[in-house]
Amino acid sequence: MAIGSASANGRSTSFNGGFSAGSTASFVQKRTLFGRRTSSGLPPPPPLNLAAAHSQCPPLFPPPPHSASTAAFSALRCTKPQTQPSQLATAPIVYESNSGFSGPGPAGATPDSMVSLLTSNSRSAATANGAQLLFNSAVTLSSAAARHLEGTHSLPTTPLRALHHTSGAASALSPLHKTQGACPPRSNAPTSSSAFAQPEAPSTAMSSIDGCDSPALSGGSPKHCSHANSPRTPWITQQGACNRVPSRLEISDPSIEDNIGSMSSVYPYNYSISSHIRTPLRSNGKEETRASANLISAIPCRPMLHTKAARSVSAIADILNCTDRSELSRMRLPPPTPTSAHAQRDHTNYLGQKAAQLVDVDLMSKHGYAIEQLMELAGFSVAQSIAKEYPAGKVLLCIGPGNNGGDGLVAARHLKHFGYKTSLYYPVQPAKDLYKNLLHQCDIHHIPVVTDLTTEAKSSDLIVDAIFGFSFKGSVRAPFDQALDILRDVNTPIVSVDIPSGWDVEHGDVQGIGLRPDMLVSLTVPKLCAKQFNGRFHYLGGRFVPPDMAEELKVPKYPGTDQCVRLA
Ligand SMILES: NC(=O)C1=CN([C@@H]2O[C@H](COP(=O)(O)OP(=O)(O)OC[C@H]3O[C@@H](n4cnc5c(N)ncnc54)[C@H](O)[C@@H]3O)[C@@H](O)[C@H]2O)[C@H](O)CC1
Ligand SMILES: [K+]
Image (cartoon, rainbow, N blue to C red; front, side, top):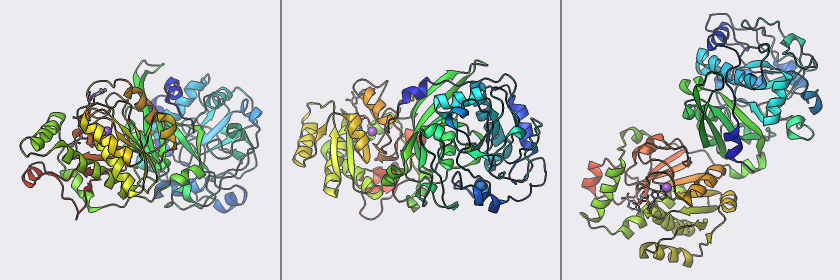
């Protein structure tokens, strides 16, 4: 799957569709489409006629992993598109979701502003209604907006679940009541929008362009999506599930992390931010942060929906870069088992950069440890942490020029003993005996050194980031700048040793060039940046701290004979 951050960065989208935040928020408060009591106290709409909908239209989209939205999602159905790709370019499209509003955009809306309308509406809606209204939007797109969406391969995903192709006029922003088609309406709930004061839509032809059935987007004959409506099972694992998951998301919001959380609740897989960029808004000159997030694994995430995240939902997915289901299931791993060590997280002591270096010095001077001893145990603990969470497979270890790299060389050797197929990417090999010996040991374990990072990273099941540790400072110098770019763009899960490379040791990914690991193995004691870690597994390794020092540093207890302990 070819994913690049350049196109994502290059795309700029205006976020003002002519709607004030106040207007969207107020009408969202007045009503919901699919059966929740609104904040204004209106009674919920009548129940859905699911049987009728089922008989004609297979489910379009999976239920989300949250019961709050499940009923609404199960109501969404699709048929084979009634419209051919060529017609799409001239047909106004109505996007609609489970709980939102509907209506045309403002006269004179531009494609960009319609995209912005989608995102700004969903954000307002979510703000007004809290976490339950995560999926919330319905708007009519002008034909120009439709063309724009198709042309840029961007489609709103979080709030949008189905669309109607109308046969109406080309350029006007048509109201919903002009739509027509074969499928039953998705709801017998009232559909008019108080904000736009549009009449209710009659029966409407529905077809998907958001990942399943679109000939316009897949370029071929439409495939049906069907799946069991189980809210608990990640949809990708269900029989006959829709075989596409966005492999890249574009996100706009000042709070990137919240959005990632939100996306995880819609697409319950691990996404990793590959880039983010601040761009001025065209309309008001304000800055906003845009980010691209790449799918890094098909491993179901723990639900991350929380009110804060729901408030900031606004995402556009690049659905053309979809990941094949077969590829996803190959990557699938059992979900993490929670451990009692989770409770330890809040009591964890986090060290700043200087303090971490001082601990290192103390261990080696005051306490007489040799670096080789510490590194052996550090690397061993990294290998053991990996073995606890990832099945044996192909592991590429990316090795930096310092001791963090040394840990990686040790881990490579132990992983090999554990049955993993390991290789090294080691572009800068210092002349120090310490590293030369470790490399020699890898060599005699038949661990090859590779040079084509892109190919190797893509073809591996796991990447170990042993590039920079707690002595990283400043902007990344060559050749590691390029290496980080490549690693950020591949979907292979990453395990970072001690510090995610590119991150400031105390403040995290302040430069926006850092890796987004699936696992972090902190060594000795987590560093301050670990507070920003939002991957799935946080382990601590380096079980070599003597008891007095361990007490002072509040080192968590290691279970049994383990060399690592899971923190979160
Ligand atoms: N007590 C412990 O916790 C132990 C931890 N270990 C590991 O050692 C690293 C820290 O090692 P150190 O050699 O001090 O630093 P780094 O690995 O981060 O690498 C320094 C190396 O990187 C170069 N560098 C720094 N900044 C940049 C930059 N912006 N661009 C390019 N290159 C940069 C610098 O010149 C050096 O060459 C710790 O994190 C643990 O992983 C020990 O293994 C055991 C004890
Ligand atoms: K690292």
